[in-house]
Image (cartoon, rainbow, N blue to C red; front, side):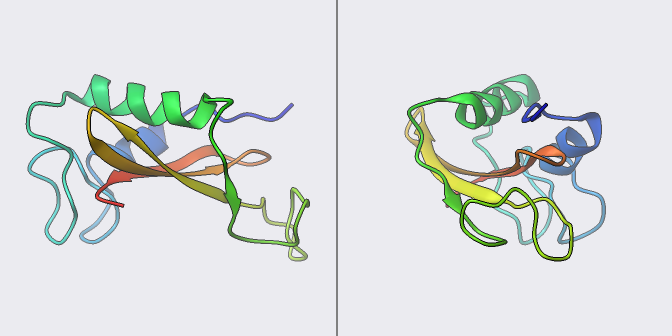
Length: 109
């Protein structure tokens, strides 16, 4: 079954990051990262990231692997990305439909 839902580790990555330069977009954001608006809660951020990831009208661009494949030649899940707007904020979302699901989401794309 293909899973595109967010995991606890991916939520932590998107909101707080793991190390400097790796995720962390909840206001005020990690150094060098574009934060989501100060008025957006962590729940709102993850709602919009999930909403974009599951929106059937979104057009996705495959960013790894051969066109139409779900896995790369190395056996890693193929990734897709898109940019969509919510409340006048452009958000880039990256997913692995046959892997971890939502990989990341960040504003200013």
